[in-house]
Image (cartoon, rainbow, N blue to C red):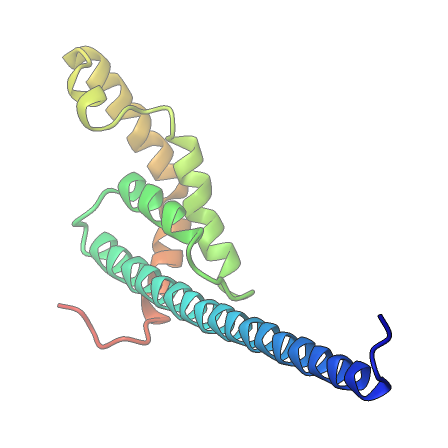
Length: 159
């Protein structure tokens, strides 16, 4: 069966239009997906910034509590060492965070919470003496670093 050339041209034109419409539809879908990814990435970055700000505020609060002797040096060191992973540390702050990380490492073997309660009193006394001795070695550096990090506070003074 021989179709007239005009019929073939119309069929080809219809096919090109259909394929163009389908390609436009797919292009629109890709554009929407990219826009959603960009929005998601922006929201994720905002959440990470907010978490970092909250972590930095927590470090300031912990340092102030430490300087008021409301926390032991070891407890503050453990908390700050944990929060350190969530904060973008400036080059001038790095050594101050390292002091807390080193103290936390030096006392990491001492049990906490329920594990501490499960120890015999004599073992608790022995570990307390050990903790105090380690804290004494770091005390000057810890206090200096706590003072520095508390002064780097960009939030209003917390009372």
